[in-house]
Image (cartoon, rainbow, N blue to C red; front, side):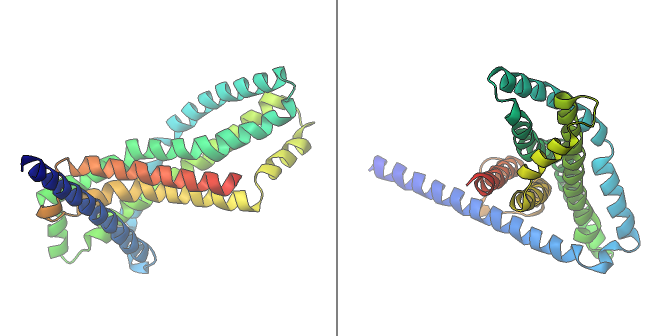
Length: 268
């Protein structure tokens, strides 16, 4: 009898966790649809909303852009040197540039930019919104006739997505420049061959996948931490662990899914 009771308890707990997981993902999708609709509305960019949007776009990108660019430059220099020396030692120097572009520009830099923005920007944004919600500030805005999603949530989501886009774009340009200098040095003699190699990697399909990958990574690290703290789960499906921890797990799952889809699209 005790074994039957324990089995039933485990099944109930598993069902509660699965239901909470599904409800959490539905809330993220629902918030994403609301944010997308607000982003298309002209009213989201007028008056105080425009100031809030500009403020979060700046604060989400400007403080971390120099540090991330410096960090990615140092790491890129090391990895480029390792790839070039290794390829040359095996007589495969003609493939060194293509390998650098595929590994660093296509894969590592967008992923690193998304994780960096999540740690420095969007996860703290989620904590700020959770604190504002606990203090009743979001309800106070609603009582004043101000939409808190338009005033507080949309600027933070847009700021996080914009930060991922800017960090990835600047670091990719710097890495491409470093790769050229590492192989050809300070001369324009190899520019034609270099552009041909980069163009061979970034064909139309790969370029589209690359842009969509950065956009979806930006949305994932911006939406998931915020959506996880804005909604209350029903008591019967509320998990035992913290909502913030579940939000982080969902965010990393979304990143892994985006990476997996991009890899399939690029190489299969």
